[in-house]
Length: 195
Image (tube, rainbow, N blue to C red; front, side):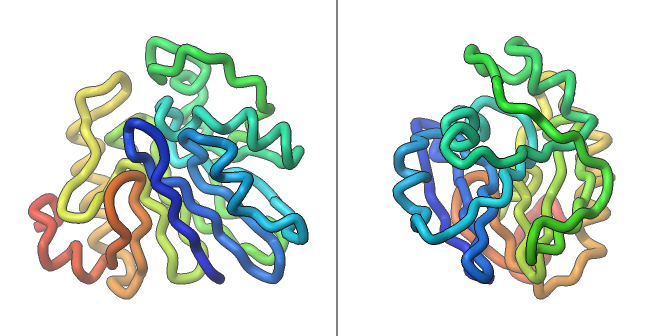
């Protein structure tokens, strides 16, 4: 699998395009749909969009991407209330895309997707693991973590999620919602929130 990072919009949110056998999954299309679409080849089939959580800076390009590729959208069932409420998601648009609420691991084409539930930044935050790639959204950043003072955020839940992350394979590559790509091994060594 090959992963392309796109840093998009005023919030510098990371969108990822995961490719395997001419199949594509888009993770967190936060902004600038034209840029996302330009980075997908006509010969590639977009199988779906994965959302790590429902904040505006991870979903603003969602409807345009789904309209273009007519693909399903996956998000934690625990995020249902947040993504459908502008006061909680901070998104003043309307999500027209049909959402598929997930709780368990699933498969899309050649992609085996493991869902790690990591509440804290939001109640329904998840990380997606595909092979040795871990898409952490706003749960884990390089040397930091996501805020817990937004609606549905919870510092106690975040601590439980961080304790869980410490049990994962340290050889995983970490693809955060903001900032640079890193490894779990590096974060276990330098991230003060994982001590």
